[in-house]
Picture 1: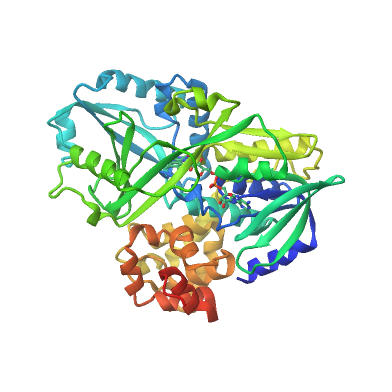
Picture 2: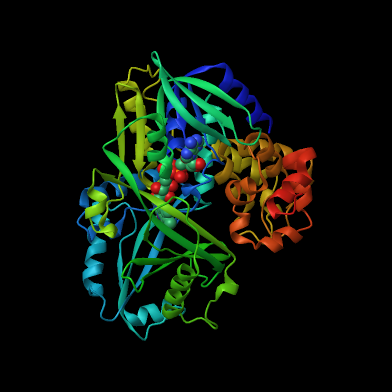
Length: 535
Ligand SMILES: Cc1cc2nc3c(=O)[nH]c(=O)nc-3n(C[C@H](O)[C@H](O)[C@H](O)COP(=O)(O)OP(=O)(O)OC[C@H]3O[C@@H](n4cnc5c(N)ncnc54)[C@H](O)[C@@H]3O)c2cc1C
């Protein structure tokens, strides 16, 4: 909590070149890019970082193969290039994965045509990934016996990529990188309205946890409020050509349905692509795509039925999946950008998933509409360019702000890890060696964790039974990751709340120990707040 309190004090004290409202993927990359290039930047979010849409995605960094059907080739090309850049820049985090797709008899396209489409997709992506394969019914039967083949006409396999940890952790690492480079960021601080005063913006902020309100000054205001962009602009008197419409999507997380590391891909009853995505010893199934009017969406009985019915129809499971098998649920709205009245006229599912950056030069304000996690590096670059065009000096315009630490740092970490036999501490539940996991999550900071374990081997103990997070990670989270509520840690800094049932977490013997490390004297209060047992 110290980091947050000291950042809130700095927000009151200083005036900034840029204030960013919203700490989802769009705000986080903007902050990471600007801070790394030497701009004085502040970022606030009314909830936790990545606490809204950016924690509800399918965790894919993908070229958008399905947009080929709507002839959006420039978008597919741009997304493929973004995906390739992410795989190159984050080799331990963004990983190529195979999509094993089966096609029902009578589907609108024959598997051979779809297979030809995957070759075109592969070429559009500069042949960066492994080549596609055709998969006749016999091969599907042999390679993925869990897939029902009685009603199939065939299938194919191609590559895209996925975020190994989860979307929220990916976003937080941009926030962390921005903080390390001088950004003043705070979660649970809401922007309640901005007005121009001379050549500056004055934004009224409220500490949602503490209740205090105070103004912050900036030359430029960046609205990265995701599904709330229009609401924030309306409050600030900014009118824009673009606006958002919302599409709701849900995922269900269930016990692992196949040992294969591939994404099982189907066409659901509504004709849309539908995935069973590996998530360690769990599988994440989804998603849906339904127009809604508000950003606040919840999983309905009908959503749950749609996902379960579709997966049960397509798999040979010993027992069909039911609500009882659902470990956790994800639900969010995609903020889709439309220009003018376009959203009313166009077929909803045909709306483009691209992003738009709109600048109001007269009032020094930038709004970021739409977009995808996949496109995040481009968003960071574009915001730097626009901020510079608005007259803010960028001291180090050529600095590369994204990507993992250099290979030499990684090799030194892995060398030290080998010398101390770190992987012997790997938890039995873990799907990978401890050294790999620590490097992916913490990069260069992981070297400090080795130091902690060398000093006291109990620092390598798994604290919350059944998970893989060790004591020194919790200490690091308490110091560097601005964990305010237990949900921040369980759902976003880690993925414990996605892969374990709430009751299992509650019963875990190490949970109170973890709360003490994260919250000190407030441990019991934060525990009770999470489980709804306070007061
Ligand atoms: C079901 C689903 C599946 C998806 N799958 C993928 C995928 O596989 N791959 C992919 O690339 N993309 C995917 N996406 C799209 C992607 O998740 C979103 O485009 C992206 O997360 C949007 O990020 P954002 O930063 O614009 O919004 P958000 O993540 O919503 O961030 C906006 C933030 O602004 C904050 N905020 C709002 N108002 C205020 C205020 N007044 N003061 C302070 N803070 C404020 C909010 O609290 C929020 O945290 C998916 C989306 C959904 C819903």
